[in-house]
Structure formats: structure tokens, C-alpha cells
Image (cartoon, rainbow, N blue to C red; front, top):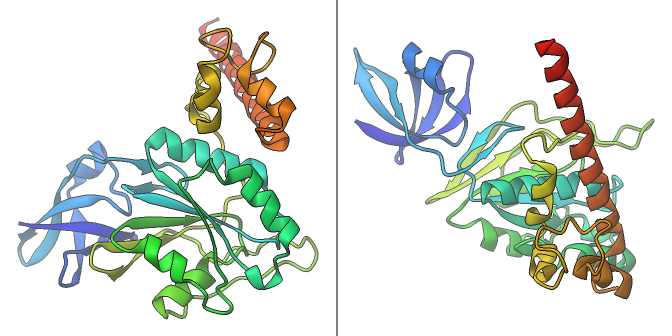
Length: 295
């Protein structure tokens, strides 16, 4: 028996790191029916007729649904001044990470073309929201802060296409993975990472490059629970008049008061309201669909 971590899911087998080497293993049909193995899964292997076979998948401590990754310690949400930041997507990533108990790091890349106004805006919105906020430059290989955070953890790079996720991995690992650019017509990223692949870069240190996110939903979160994933709102909730305050229209709301006083970022709060509306609409549609189905 050997323990290992799945690095990549191939068409009919799995690349598994077992410490001293990487082996390729098949999965028992029964196991695949019970639980589909994912990159990042900790597995137990056995040898059958000279081949490695997945015998068991250990319980997952966390999971990212899209893209599918198991057991990440932290998500490095990467952004840059170009392409334009999709703040709503970043907020959704943070909420999803909080839901799964995954550490979040906001990683601002391309500091060689970043002005103070851009950085001030990022820090104002996220300084006390994510676990850490760092600035790096893949083009100049200024990645010391990033390397420190990566050591001893399984990290998942996430973010829009063309923000430099793969370039950062190349800078840290010295690899030559293909790097995407911007579409001249749309100034949006051209996705070059088509699947999840985990790289081992040191003892107990893994990183995953993931496809750029075109969209991300919060379908598993109920509307009343959304405020629980905004740490800056949770810290003030005890001062709200109502215990289950949604921070929308309730009187004497500490969160709204903090927004009006400038203690909380107004644009991030407005996006919170947008996400809350999305969840309410989705819930209404689910109820309508169930009623039509039952009828």
C-alpha cells in the first residue's frame, strides 16, 4: 500500500505523487461510481498484477467545484490592471473559499504597469477581507512574497485569463508552460490552461494552475447565509438591531452605517447587494421549477 496525491486526471488513469516519484494508476470501477477522483485527492494505492490501482480516496477537507480540485489549503486570487478587474468574480471566489474553509490570498501581479491609484483601490476593498494581500511582478521575477506563502501548502491559482497566473508559476518554478495573451478585439484573456494540473515544487508544496473563470455562481448558498461569508460584516453584526440582519433595509444596521460613514467600501457593499439579489432570484426560479414539476 502507498499513499499519494492525485496530480492530474487523464483519460483512463491518474498521475499520483507518492513522494519519491510520480506513478500512473487506474481506479476501480466501484470507486469511480461512489466518488469521482479529483486532482488534489489524497489516495491509497495498491499494486495489482504489477499495476497501481486506486484503492481508497481519503476524506476531503475542502473542495472547489469549478474547476474541480480537492483539498487546497489556499486560493491565490490573481488580478492585474490589465485585463480590467472583474470585482464581482473576485467577491464570488472569496465567498466560495470561505464556505469551504479555504484560506484566501489576493495576489496583485504586473506591478511594473500598476499605478498607485489602482493599488489604493485594491487595498481599500480587500485589505481586511482576504487572509493576505501581496504584490508581485512575474515579468521581473519579483516573487519573493509569493514563494514564502506557497511553501508547505497546496495552493490553487485562480483568476481571469491573462492576469499572469501561468507566468507567475513559470517564475516560481522555472517551468516553460504556455502563456496566454489578450484578445485584440475584446482585451479579455485568451485561455491557455485547459485542465487542472498540480505541480509539486517542494516538500509538501504543490500548486495548481486552473482555467480562467468566465463565470462563477454561488448556487449552494442560501440568501440569508450570504452575510456570514463577509468577515467585515460579521465583525459588525453584533451591533445591528436585528440578530439575523441582512444589511439591506433593516433599521439601525451597523453595516449600512459603516458604509455611509466610509468605514466599509461602498462598491464592495453594492456588489454584495447584487449577489444577494442573484441568490434570491435563483431561489425563486428553483421553487417555480419544482412547483411546475410537481404539477
